[in-house]
Length: 297
Image (spheres, rainbow, N blue to C red):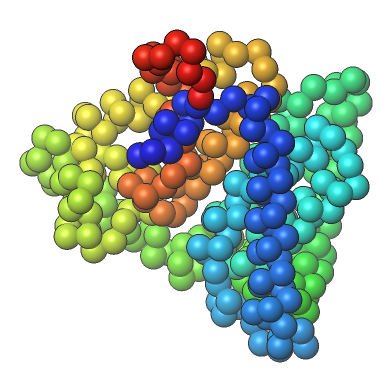
C-alpha cells in the first residue's frame, strides 16, 4: 500500500537518473550472482536444462529494471546502456519462465511503434518491420542458438525448448495447469452466491492457490459486478493518464508500470502483493492535496 503514495510522488525529471542507476545495479548484481556465483560450476552446459533452474521469482523481480534500462537505451543510445540492456535480456531469457519474456517483447514493440518519436518515422518503421520479418524467418535458428548459449552459461534453456517444441502458449505442464486453475476459478465465480466475492484473504481457502490471472482474480475476490467495475475504473484512469499528458517520458513510464503489473499479473502472481500495481494506481490517480503548500514530494 505505501507504493500508492510513492507512485503519487514520482516526478520523472527528478528521479529518472536515480532509477536508472538502481536498475543498472540490480541487473549487474543479478548477473554476478546467477552467472558467476550460483551457476559457476555448470559452465560445461550439462547441468541446467529443461525445467531445472526454473526461477520465476528472479525473472519477475528483474523485469522492471530491464524495461527501465531498455527505455534509457532508446533515449541515450550509449554503448553502456546497450550492453546492460543485452545483459538484462539475457538474464530474463535464461531464467526459464515465459511471462517476463512476453512482457519484454510487448514493451519494446509498443514503445517503438506507438511512443518513440523518430526523425524519419517511415524509414524507422520499415526497419522495425524488416527486423521483425528476419526474426520470424530465422526464429528456429535463433531459438536453437540461444538455448545452447544459455546452457553453456549454466542457466535454463526451458523457454527456448518449449518454444521449439511448439508449446510456448499451451500444451506444456505449467501452461496446462494455469488453464485448469483459470477454468476452476471461472466455475467458482459462476457458482458463487456471494455478492462481493470470496474476499482477498479467502483465495487460499476457496481455491488453494492464487488464480494466476488478474482479470479473473478481481471478480473472484470482490464479486462479478464490483470486480469488473474496479477493472473498468483502473483501465479508464490508465487511458485518461495517457491521453491527458503529452510527455513521451510519462507515456513510457506508464507503459513500464503496466507491463510490470497488469501484464505480469495476466500470467502469474496475485495483485494482493504486487508493489508495481499499487505504484501504477498512485501514478495515474490525481495527487492528494498537500496540507503544507510548501512541501514537495
